[in-house]
Each structure stands twice: as C-alpha cells, then as structure tokens.
Image 1 (cartoon, rainbow, N blue to C red):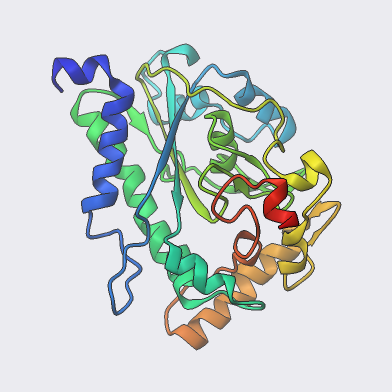
Image 2: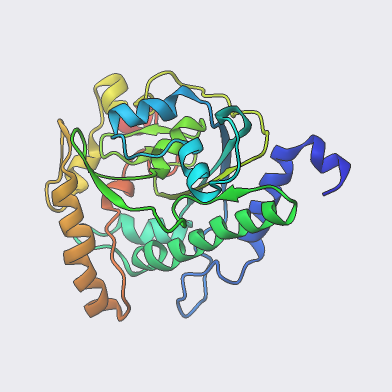
Amino acid sequence: MDQKQHKDLAGWMKTIIQKFIRNSPENTLQNQANEKAFEKVLIGFSSGADPLYEEYNEHVGPFHWTPLEIFALAFPGVRVSSEELTVISWVLPHIEATKADNRGETLHPSERWARARGFGEEFNMKLRSHVVAVLEREGRRAVAPQVFGQWSRKISDRHGLASTWSERHVAYASGLGTFGLCDALITPLGKAVRLGSVVALIQIPPTPKPFTDRHAYCLFHSEGICGKCISRCPVKALSQTGHDKKRCHQYVEVKMGDYVKTHYGFDGYGCGLCQTGVPCESKIPTREDVEG
C-alpha cells in the first residue's frame, strides 16, 4: 500500500470493492447472456464502538455479535478495543433487468431474480472473502462475519427469525439506509439490493448518518402514506402492523425453492416482490412517487 492510500483508507477500500465488482468473472447471473449480477455499489463505514452495536444486543438478542465479539472469536489471541475496529458495509443493487423482470411478477420470483438471489449472493460471499484477503495481504486483520464458520440463524424473543450478524443492521449503523415496513433496508439506491460487510482492525472515519429514525426513508412510517409493499406480498406476510417473518420464510425459502428448481432448473429460491414494483425499489421515495 503506498503512502497516498495510507492517507485515504476509505477511498482505497472503496476502490478495492469497486474493482472486484467490475472485473471479477464471479459477478454473474450464470444465465445464457452471462449478465453481471451487480454493476453499482454503495459503501459505508461504522466504528466498532458505535453504540448501535450494543443496542442490537438488547433489541435483536444477546446472540447478535458486536464487532469486538466477532473479531475476538476470529482472533482470540489479539487484544484490541472496539474503537480500533471499523465495519466496512456495502449495498449491491440488482441490475435494472433483474428488477424489471421481478416488477412484472405477482406470485413467483422471476428467473433473473432467483439467479441474483442465489448466484449473486454467491458472488457477494466471494466479495466478502476478497476484502478480507486484501486487508490481510496488507497486514491488517479482518473477518467477514457471514463467512465465519460460527455464523448462524437464531430466534429473537422480540423479532422472531434473526441471526448472529445482520447485514441490514450493520448497513443502518454505517449510514447506508433505514428500515422499511417489510423490514428490508431502504437505501439511496433503493431496497432491491444485497448487503455485505467485513470487520477490520483499521481506522476509517464513520460515514455520517443522514437520519435519526430507523424508519426515516419509509413513507408509511414517516408520513403515513404508501404501504404499497403490502399488496405485493403473495402470501399476506405484510400488513400495516409489519412483517410476518415466519410466513415469509416458509414461502421464500421452502415453497419457492421447489418452484425455482422445477421451473428454472437450478437450486435456488427467492421472492423479492415487496422489493420491486414499489416506490422505494431504486431510490429513497418521496410523496410524489406515491401520489404521482
């Protein structure tokens, strides 16, 4: 790493991620046209000492790792403080063709969407590992929590289905978006996205949070309008009271797993109907997006 990169670690990290998305042959829907799964990325950073990570222990569950906890699991012999850690978080919006295909569906995921959910997430896992590898080559310890062998799904007393590391909550802490009625993260590039992150022993200034409320970008919560994702759900897992995770999971991963294999000929699953065909699909929505 040269001296200029030392002075601009945020810019260096962004370049590493952007280049991998642009150049990696793994970034593919694995369809006949070999389309890329992702073309754009939004990147943010948060301090390992951000109070939100401790709050997640209370609101999600004590099983949800703080950055310091996952780093200690990965590097038990290394003594560090939370303040020395940075969480690198990113948002990968689906390409327009994927969103357009799924926008036209009312019951099942489109083939492109199912490919992006499966093969696109496989690439996202490789991106996580790539970021860790680059940092380690520069002598900086890092871990991708979702790649780490002890990552697992859990049941939250308050929220039902959860996990030991939530990419959505990490992205929120990193200033990249806020939660919608369907629990997806609404970002400046919309909510039809995949998310990823890495915890590193590196000092990068946190990305400012341009919001104070966790539902700031959701018009249903902020202005009492919209709610268009409710009618997009084919199994009524969404209502004005929120998201039925159990019903959603059963449809997305079980029933649609059978559908994808039978109709598209590969192992996968998905739905994403509440993430497409809605005002927050590709942007932070405005009242005009709903009323227009």
